[in-house]
Image 1 (cartoon, one colour):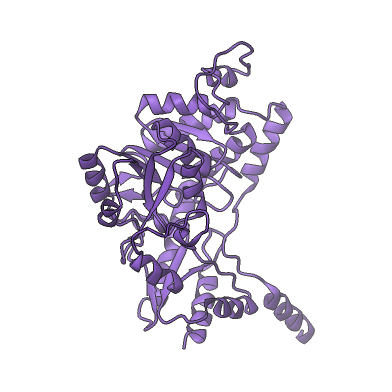
Image 2 (image 1 turned 135 degrees about the vertical axis):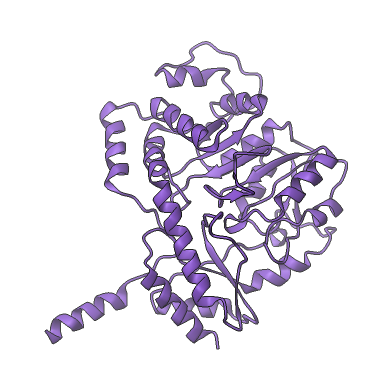
Amino acid sequence: MATKTSAMASIDAKRLIRLSKSCLTTAEKQAVMGVLDREYLGMGEEVQKFEQSLSQFFGRPAVCVINGTAALHLSVQACDVGSGDEVLLPSLTYLASFQAISATGARPIACDIDSETLVLDWRDAERRMTPRTKAIMPVHYCGGVGDIDGIYSFAKRKGIRVIEDAAHAFGSYHGGKKIGGFGDIACFSFDGIKNITSGEGGCVVTEDSKILDNIQDARLLGVEKDTEKRFSGQRSWEFDVTKQGWRYHMSNIMAAIGLEQLNRFPEIAVRRQNLARHYDELLHNHSRIRTLCLDYHSVVPHIYTVRIKELSNRKELQSQLLDHGIQTGVHYQPNHVLQYYYDINALPFPITDAVYPELLTLPLHPDLSEQDVEIICIKLKELIV
């Protein structure tokens, strides 16, 4: 008996609580096998079904693409943003948001964030606006949208497009409305660790028919009306191309996974929300650990990030947590410090620069248990003296 207990303790000691992971069932695997058995792996019937299901989910049309970055890139391009133009967005976001803009030839203009929500501060964005500004790209950090109403009011006054980077916010609500179900353009990611996954993948949601038509063609190398052929299992052999396109279409394999994940989303959403609430309950009264002010009845969090006051050596803390089998992350390194996007003449970023050193992302995914959350919080509190 003692030997068995010792062996179990050894296994537990080696167990890694992962920061994030894909959470799949036999349903997704069987769906992929169905596509493989039919031997039509490219863009076809499954992609069409996934788009239809997403359109029903959002209550407005959705177009699927290869990933979330492609969704952003094609949306910016479809808004006729290009060389010489500028797009406002928060510096505190993943590099993909910036790359999607610069891929069109436009210039991403890094902006500061709100100190409470860590979402784009539209007042700071207004200070950085120029006659070349064509769009604003709010990023829904951790699933929260911040002052999205203020952002839309600002954009309307200035006559610019709003392209929401909603990669973190699939299933979240604002004012009783689903993110993606209102506004101008919303872009989502379905990569392996997002709220739902299709392995890779993403989508653009909008009621602007011109944007939709543009993206449908642009994802297929600019071949006009090729989407209709692909959905019927055919190809366009004679066609015209009038604009730059990209090979950004989704495959049937990816869509098959996405369809099953979408079916499971109600349980996935509740699981993520419950885990985030449990974190909040265990960490809210700590003197140095500050949780984000998010309502997990309306927000479905992609990640769970905390702020730690006077965190002098984050790498050391992460290393200590990893020694105890707890994987952590940092979301995100500000883009205004990157050589490619650094602008010596830019206005300062006081909030972003103050917040970034405090950030630490803790494990969050549907396969995480409440006990895992308790272990993480206990160990984090022990190390934050």
